[in-house]
Image 1: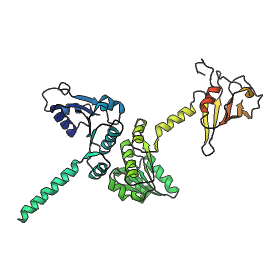
Image 2 (image 1 turned 120 degrees about the vertical axis):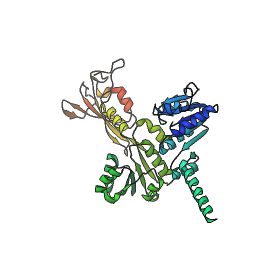
Image 3 (image 1 turned 90 degrees about the vertical axis):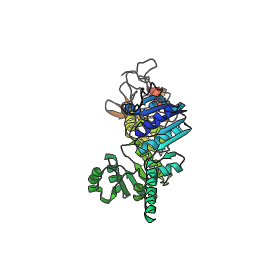
Image 4 (image 1 turned 180 degrees about the vertical axis):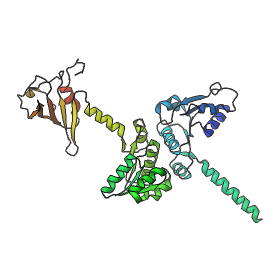
Length: 146
Length: 226
C-alpha cells in the first residue's frame, strides 16, 4: 500500500516509520525541512535508503501534493499541527484526488465529531485522552467504594 | 440583518464599523487577546473574544440566528472551515470568505465556500483595466442594464486611425458614443476620421470587449508596443 502522510511531527513521523517497517511504501510531506531528521530517529539507515520518500511543502500546495505522489496514494493521513489544515487537506484528498482511505487527526472533539458525521474519518486524541482519564477516575472511585 | 464577522484585523474591523453604521447587528470574533482589547475600546459589546474555528465560540456568538457570516482572518484554512461549518452545520443563508493566497481559491471552490474575495485578485483585475494592453479602460459596468462603457486610447499602431467612423465594422450591440481629442469631447458622426491619440468611448453589451479590442487594436503583425 502507498501511504501519504502530511505533517511529520511526533505522530506523523512515528506512523511513517511503523508503516515503512511493515513493508508499505511511505511518502511524507512537511513544510519544515528539519522534520526529516525526526523521521530518522531510531533508524540505523537514512529514510531514503530504507525506501521512504520526503517532500518539503504544505498540504495546500497542489505542486507539493503531486510531488509527494497523492495521485498514486492508497491512503492519506493528515497529521499537521493545525486542525483546520487537517480538515481542509483531507477533504482535498478525498474530493479532488479520490484517495480511497483518508484519515484526519483533529484535536478538537467537537469538530472531530461533526466532520466524522460528514463522512470524514477523524481521529481525535483529545477524545481518547478524555475517555481514558474518565474511566481511570471511575475505576479509582470504584476501588475506594469497595 | 444579523452579521458575524470573524477576524478583527484591518478588514474585519473596518467592515464591522461600516455595517454598524448601516444599522446591522454585528458580532466580531477575534482570537488574539491583545487585538480584541484594542478593538473592544471602539466596538464594545459588538466584539467577542475567542477562536471561531471552535464550534462553541460560534454558537456563543449566536451563529444559529445569523443571516450572514463573513470570515476575513489572515488564515485561509480558518476562513474555509468557518464558512463550511456556517453553511453546512448551522445553515447560515449567506457566507463570504476572504482568500489570502489566490492559489488557495480552488480549495474554497472545492469545499463549496462561495463567494470568496481575494484582494490580490481584485488588484490584479484593476491592473488589467488600468494598464490595459490596447489602452482599453473599463469605465462602468451597468449590471442591471446589462451594458458596459469602455474607453480606448488609439495608439500609433491602432488599426482604426485614419478611418471614417462610418466605415468601422462595429460589432452589433456596440456604439461609439464620444471622442476626446486635444482635451475636447465631441459626439462622432459617420464622417469623423479617427486620429492617433484620440480617446474614444464606447457603450456595449457585455462580452463584446474582445471584439472591440480586436477592432481597435494594433494591426496584425505589429509588436503591440506604443
